[in-house]
Figure 1 (cartoon, rainbow, N blue to C red):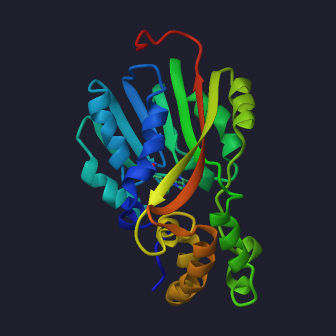
Figure 2 (tube, rainbow, N blue to C red):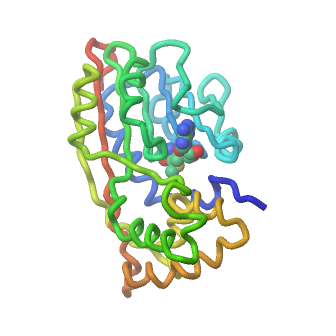
Amino acid sequence: MTRAMWDPEKYGEFAAERSRPFFDLVERVGIVPRSVVDLGCGPATLTATLLDRWPGARITGVDSSPEMVAAALACAVPGRLEIELADLRTWRPAGPVDLVVSNAALQWVPEHRSLLPELASFLAPGGVLAFQVPGNFTAPSHTVLDELCESPRWRDRLGGRNRRKPASAEPEEYLKDLDGCGLSVEAWETTYLHVLRGDDPVVEWLRGTALRPVLAALGPDAEAFCAELAPRLRRAYPARSYGTVLPYRRIFAIGRALGHSGRHK
Ligand SMILES: C[S@@+](CC[C@H](N)C(=O)[O-])C[C@H]1O[C@@H](n2cnc3c(N)ncnc32)[C@H](O)[C@@H]1O
């Protein structure tokens, strides 16, 4: 059986670690929006936290994965939180939006920098575009995975262009991009030191994200691949008495449209 690209249950593991950047992002938004769009909302567990944060907001979560959308629909609240199955590259709002947010999703759209003018055009006066993407694609978690994909046993199926790979840009590049969209910009980066528990926790972490395209491509051979990956990652991220430390760099960008929404915090 072919595996789905996304698995909401697997992604939900390490929820505390994965949710922290979302909260750090929305904390900096600086407005009280009446309309919010979350692009690449996944299972919408984080999107749904915005219901309490902004009780007057109508929120739309958009995701292109049928598995994620099926999970997200459990969080839907009629009139307050709608979920749409759509590709963020082509989705358009019905009208101007106060907040366009995207957490840990744009890296799956390699050309996402070229989409930023379009996303900025969704904003109402004084509206905010806020996103977070991983900035760790040169970290061992990715280079070790890449090396194994390119090894003789796997490269025919996983090497080079055969594999969908996430990608992001540097904070300064997003800063320039958003400035070019006429937005007032704040960009920064944070490296979180996640302390993970359990056996081979970095493999388990990757199973929820970067390993998804690999597992989907390999089908029944997926576990043989993971068995080769595990010792390599153990060497890169040794277990300590207090757990396995996974340093994780994340990049944040916020662009504010000119004009006054009248709803600044
Ligand atoms: C790592 S998950 C993040 C989910 C959620 N934002 C969160 O922080 O929990 C990435 C999500 O982006 C979605 N995604 C990837 N490419 C997409 C696209 N082109 N259009 C819409 N969603 C996309 C995936 O389906 C997945 O649910």
